[in-house]
Amino acid sequence: MDNQMERLQKAYNDIEIPEELSQASRKGIERGKLHKQQKRGIKMNGLKWTGSVAAAVIISFTVGVNTVPAFADSMNDVPVLGKLVSVLKFTDGSAGGGTIQDGVDVNFISLKHQKNSDQMILNFANSDNTQDLASSYNVKFTDNPYTMTVTVSGARNFSAVKDLETLKESKYVQDAYPLITLDDSMIRFNVTFKEPVAYEVKEYKDPAQVAITLMDKKGDVGEGASIYSLRTISAPSGESQGMAEEMLFGLKDVRVLKDQKGLFLVEAGYFNSEAEALAQLEKIQTEYGISDLLFVEKRSSQEIPQSISQAE
Image (tube, rainbow, N blue to C red; front, side, top):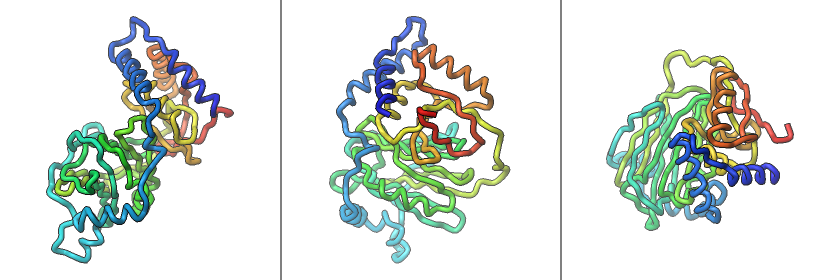
């Protein structure tokens, strides 16, 4: 793994930007390099989480009864959520909201079972354990496998990381896990689903919350044909995924996934045929000057990625 890190670091630092390279690709690589230099010594949110169970209990209580569904169940006159700000409208499975802030903590995530749905509620807090408006965030749904990626900008802490285990109690959820990021003011996590889901996302204020409602998806949700994933090797969660993401900055469908053995990989898109995947690989190698980083994995539609090490 040390050799892989050294190769990634060398490949990253040695990238040359051809004159004929598209402006978007040039800017992506330049920004990635600058971002890497600025972030070399930072704490990585995907690796270091702070806070204790006791602190989390105090925070959840301080935020108030509006935050915790258990209180609402016993006190029907107290609303679970704050005041509705917006209902997100999704484009290609992606939508966002909130306001630009800094120093926010995603301090608590609750799961509420409803009659025909499950609801995940993200709670935001500042240093005073209160927060009126949600920090800037994005929610993105993707296929193969069915995955929801939540990104919160301006977040310095992720006390709610412990609550990701609770999300697995939903009938829809197969796994939930934090993602590495080299930006110390951003937190991310993935939720993978057992099957396709219908969803609705609402933002609230006073207190700041985002409610993600999951429902049964009607219609044909059967398994499709094989896909061809353009991906890195599997590795423990760490800087290698962050570096690979930055090297691929500017590509549309880059995401970090967990494999079947609990290791992590970066995927640069998936395709319906091996020829399409190889064509994209050649394009990346030519435009980004990156070689020996990605390979093509064939897997069944919706299958969790295989665990593939460098030795293999």
